[in-house]
Each structure stands twice: as structure tokens, then as C-alpha cells.
Length: 151
Image 1: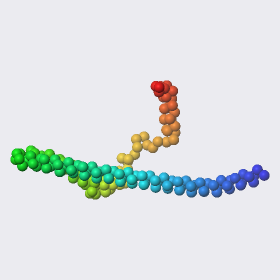
Image 2: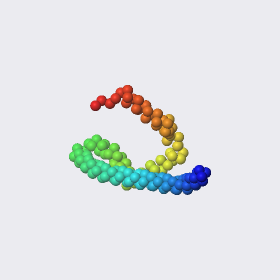
Image 3: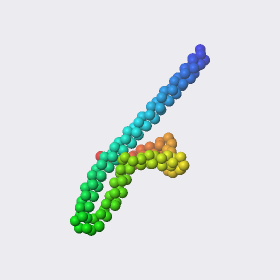
Image 4: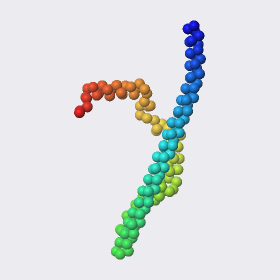
């Protein structure tokens, strides 16, 4: 009688194991999809932020350029035009970042690093393990016992 129950439980366990594995796969796929969509939204927000900053900076560049050029026309002194050189480079950088293909060039460089220079991406001391996490947690508990937080 006990043998029949144990065989039946083993069969049920095998059936449930396949079912749980499929549930875990679906859950993992959903997590990956959610993280991908969140990353896309964050990148979209970053691009929108850069475009807004670019527009503000362009308005500043136009105002400063007009003032500097007016100063040059009145005094005929060339040093009024010198600040336009770095302002032009910064303005072109933001235009390239916001409306150009700088994002694509950055992505291509990142893919190159990931494929050809992956050793630069390794974490110091490697990936954390469950035992190292538990050890850190126990050390933190011990530290709290020795030095309790002040009220």
C-alpha cells in the first residue's frame, strides 16, 4: 500500500515538474520583456531630455552669438568672437546627440566592446554568490549588534 502511494506521488511530481518548469520559463520571459520595455522607456526619456536641453542650449547660443557679434561690429575687436568657438563645438555636440546618429555610434561602440573587449566588463571579485551574500548579511547583523543605531 505504501509502495503504490509513493509511485503515484513520483508520477505527480514529474507531471508537476514539467508544469512548474513551463511556468518558470513564462515568468522569466515576462521579466526579460518587462526589463527590455523599461530600458526602452528610459532611453526614450534620455533622448527627449537631450533634445530639450539641445533646444535650450541653441537659444542660448543664438543669444550669446548675437551679443558677441554685435560687440565685434561696434568695437572691431576680434576677441569678442573667441567664445563662439567652444560654444559652437558644444552646440554641435548636442545637436548630434539629439538629432544626429550619435546614439547609433554609441550603441555600435558598446556592441564592439561587448564582443571584442568583454574582459573590461567583468565585475571586480566576480559575480556575487549566495554564500557571499549570506556572509555579508551576517556580517552586517554582527556589526549592528556591536554598534547599535542611535535613536
